[in-house]
Structure formats: structure tokens, C-alpha cells
Length: 492
Image (cartoon, rainbow, N blue to C red; front, side):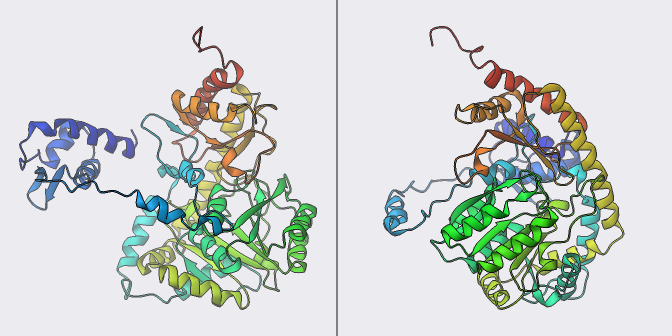
């Protein structure tokens, strides 16, 4: 059983048993709970910590855990209805509404209920994460001289140098800023490059978190279609001309969600078109380290072939490590670097030094290349398992592109499903069947041309869960799309 589900189950059992103890009464010892429920000491510790966070239990070092005493009185609920007026009073003057829809992001961040297979996740399953290597790196980092002091605002020089070498070309450590994860780096880039109310060109479809970031910054996302070779340069040029935009955000390598890689001939075209428009290209190089074992040699980042400072590059360690290992790089050439630095300093001061030191320890250890090789092989195995399962169980779903990197597949529902609500119905039916999938609608900033699903093969325990997840999805498809009236009662 996975640690996460074990903790949730133990919390629920202990919560049901709390009435056996009087307020202030002592709970069984951790050792007794380990023996009784046949779980690890870590599981017991985490369960008690969750109950303590809920105010149900009080833990005292050296004494044990006790049932919390009830609060004598509760504060009045208050009236927050005034906020609805305050938050929207000047909304009519906003060029772009300030409300932010984060639902497309939370789908890949939220843990599914117990028993539900996670084909919606955006991060590696714990079995794929280099947990031992990260723990060892963090332990070594904590013993480094000055590890708990204040780091340079731009980041540790050695870590900036490591990211610069990974980008390649003429990029130097002086042109790299260390940021707290790719999402934070992208937010900084958008705020630096585009004033509120202006358009920003985005790939279509694209990562929902990018659309949410743009709207949170008061920007207006304008879609530019993507095909199997990446963004279409002719439509990119048309979009710059029609909108006057000064920013284009793209993922040239294993684009999310299509998995497309920007073709070599298009790379130079994209940079030329942006340069002629006087615009920046924000390159989100988010999964370069999640390449599959059968992939051809990877193209260099766009930033490596950009002497004119068109590209603002974002690269991250998070996808190849853990969702909590939030260390990324923001690289740029020219005066824009100072603006990026100023915004980042104002927003977050700096990335905590222990985390930066741990990143250095991790990427400098022999465990790092071993982890990447093992991950590359396993991702290919999982991708092949999912494509085979889809071909057997769900031949109605089209898979126009099988990527050689990343952690998911982008599948299209049959024609006619886009306007019928089949995508939403299938997503809901899948959850009832015990599998979480990601609907395609949040990936489009305008009306989608077809209904889609994004299916992750990296967030589950292995190929067995992939096969079972697709089997459950087949049952949901039969219910919601192929035979939507089968389960309806007569007369309704």
C-alpha cells in the first residue's frame, strides 16, 4: 500500500476512535499503533501530525499524543460579503478580468481520493523520484558552511553556472537567476515583459497554468495553433501582426500537452519572426530531463542559439525530481535581465539557501546521472504500456502523436464530441470508475477544435496500474460516450 493512502486510512481510523478518550486523555504510544495497525513509524508520525494540524490531537515530545481539549468558545462567523463589492468595484475598468480560474492547474496538483488511479498527475510517482539521493543531498547541504545563511539574491554562483552549462551556447552564469520553480519563473517573466491589459501569444493547446498566470497578470492570452512539428510560424507571424503582442510563450521540447518538438526549420523562423516583431520569446524548457530511452538527440534550447536576447529561458529541476524540489533557472541576455531580477527580488527575496545547496549536492553526485538513465528507461516502458493499452481497449480514441519525452499522452475523442459535453461526462464517469484523467478543455484559451484527454503515465505506481487505469477508462467511455443512455432510468 502506498504511504500516502496508508496515512489517510490511519488518520480516519484514529479519528473514529478519539471518542474513546476523554479530553486530555493519552492515546496509545507510537510503538503500540505501529504494532496494532501494521504500519511504519513514519506513517504513524504523519497521521498524528495531521490530527494535530486539525486540532484533534496534541503531541508533546517525550510524553506522547493526547486528545485535544475542546475550545471553550468559538469566535463569531463574521460577515465577509463586503469583499464581493471590494474585489469587483473597479472591475469595469479592467481590460482583462482579475478573477483567476485555477481549476486547470489544481487538476494536476490535487491528490485523487483513495483507490482512484492517478492518470491526471503532473509529477513523478514517488517510486520514480530519487528520494534517497535527495535526502542524502539535503543532509549534506545542511552541513555545508554557511548553508543556513542568506544566499546571493541571484542565486548561488555554482548553481547558476550549472544551469548555464545545461543551456549551452554563449549563456553565462551571470545571465542566470535561480527561481523557486518553473511556475514562479514564468510568472516573473510575464510581469517583466508585458504590461497589464496587453496580449500575450500562447501555443494552442497549452499548459493551463500558463493561461492562469497570464490572466492573473492582467494579460490577454491569444492562441497560436500547434501541429506535430510545433507552433506554426505563418500563424505566429499573423498573430504578432494582428495583435501587436510583444511576448510569445512556448514549449519547444515535448510541448504540453501535445508532446510536439519544434522542428529544426521552425526554430530559426520563430526567432526571426519574434525579432522582427520586436518581441520576446519565453521558452519554457520544462521536461528536458524527462527524455525517453528511444529519443533521438535533443535539440538545444532556443536560448543557446539566440545572440540578440530574444529568448527568456526557463528551466527547472522539479519535473525530474519531486514536486517539492522547487529549484529553477531564469536566463536572459541584455537589459531585460535586470528587470527580471528586480521583480523576483521584490516578490520573493531569494530561493532558500538550503534548497539551493541541496540542488548542487544532488546534481553533482553520481546518483544524478544514474537516476536520469533509469528514469529515461522507465518512462519509455510506461509510455509503450499506455499506448498499447489504449490501442486494445479504446481504439475510438485517436493518438496523433507518440512523444519521445515527457510524462503524458494527448488523445482526441471522436469527432462530434467537442460540443456534446462528452469530454466532461467522460471525465466524471472515469472518476466514478476509479481513475482520474485530465479534460482537454482547460488547455485551450479559445474554443477547442475537438474534445481531448491528457493521460499521465508517470504519476501511477507502474505498468500494472496503467493497464488497470485504461481498463477503468474503457468502462467509463462505454457509459458516458458510446452508450450514454444505457444507465438512464425510463421516464426521466
